[in-house]
Length: 251
Figure 1 (tube, rainbow, N blue to C red):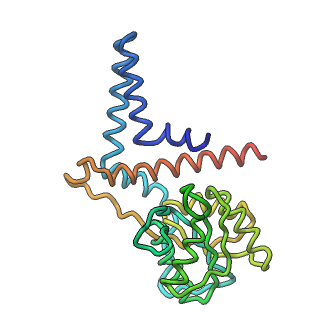
Figure 2 (cartoon, rainbow, N blue to C red):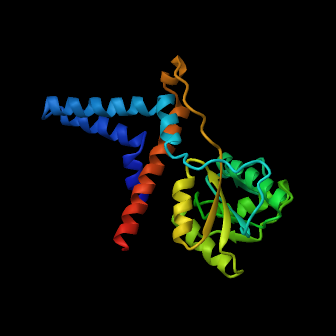
């Protein structure tokens, strides 16, 4: 149900559904239907503009990158969150592997692990039904390609809140209560909040920052990449709003 609501609210399905509904409504109420269809078309166009995608992502980038040469001061583990998964990877002997977003997070987590000596926890459940949990692929890639074996594998979570809850349970078994959290800069506010609610002290280690938008002609030329950025930016606002409602309802 949650995934269906998300799909209907976010681009491209949301604006396209609004456009289609408006076109159908024009048969009975021409003005109202036309207005609805026009709104859907405009929202679709806006979601494809690079400047809109950049603003959407950067609105979440509230945590700065760790300074060069950073050293831990009480943190006892590095937690890296999954982002995407490739369920069809014939170039890999296992047939599946991590997606580019997850790989970007893992690269940074691996660098932190080497420079600090902190153990790694990988977190991520099943994204594509035909494939294994993302955390299992993350563990394989870290061991095989980075020469680092994660100490903990959290492979049951379905979203960021579960990433936090299930990771906290694993870590508590080893008395770990303070962690370095690695995820994309635009995902960090929601992720940090979820891990804090799970009872962990969190040092944010964001990566994959979106650069500031540049006011040039290209910023107003529609593109598929821009729509993806808009999607992720709006996805985060939707997720943060949902978590706030759940937290308020829980008291």
